[in-house]
Image (cartoon, rainbow, N blue to C red; front, side, top):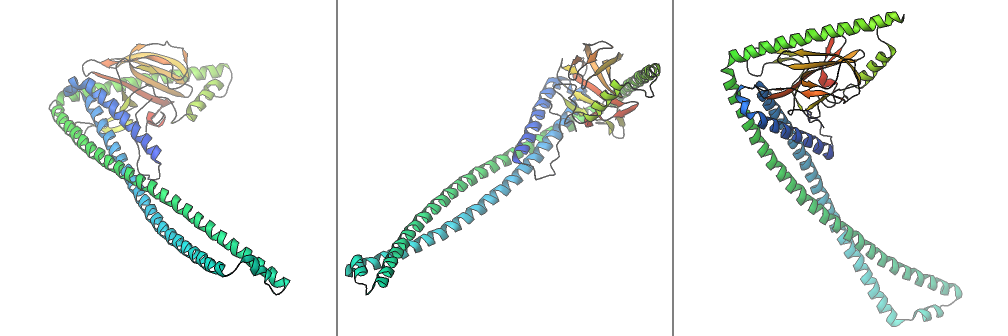
Length: 408
């Protein structure tokens, strides 16, 4: 499972469960980058890779702090809502209690009046003493209505008592909920304070490291120049291979007298690859993107810009590298200082994996998504274990972050 996720927290409509999941992913990546930093700490004074992981750590902690702020805001809203519900319930209980007192008072008066009246008359005699049959019938109806009224009064009192009991139970539950939410809010505020301190410490470490690294400007500029040369060599090699692949596809199409460069199989594969944009598995089971695609300012030296043809993913030592999609191994080649590289053909698309110390496949092999390609290379001097990954569509470079699952 991958942790390389930069989250956007601008929307407050997200559910608590979604927020918890996002927080969990950020915390996993923070733990993973912390582990990587601990492993490379001995080389941190001379390692730009360590600095990039450190910057990723700061970014993740800021994202976590952002998530905590949103969670606190959502919790404050929930607390206010609970407080309003408690106030409304309390008011409703008071109204219900008043109504119950009134009902009991009316019933008591009715019983007292009935008791006084019964002392002077008997219901049967009351009916018999009627002057005629019509009057007797009316007296029977009156007595039935009176009995029904008394019964209704009793039912009203019982029903009001039940309602009151339910509302009192709701009030108790809401009060308990308010206590829990308030305690949760305080815990989140404590977490926020700790995270603020943690970010400050990490930023301080970054500033000190940048200061030390900047003293070795000549060394690092030479390293940067060497890396750019290696990137150019990789770029040239990829273009040569792609040119050869396109030529072979055209030759094959011409032999079959077809009017298109790609075979139907290759076209179908290209279409599938394109349909999986944003869904492709990562080329490593675990890792963190420490350098994205495109133009970016140098981490240490002001005014220096670099261009990355793909993305750089830092990972654990001896981690397996895997294919991101079904394809064919077009070429296996070597880039000095970077280890071995593999180019996979996916029809119109190509994926490039640079930085392998061992290769598990050979040219011409047909692979499935997530099939092992080899083992990642670790540079002993810097102590960094890093994979460089690219995606091409014909001769055009693509941003791999937009193709891999949740890598944006």
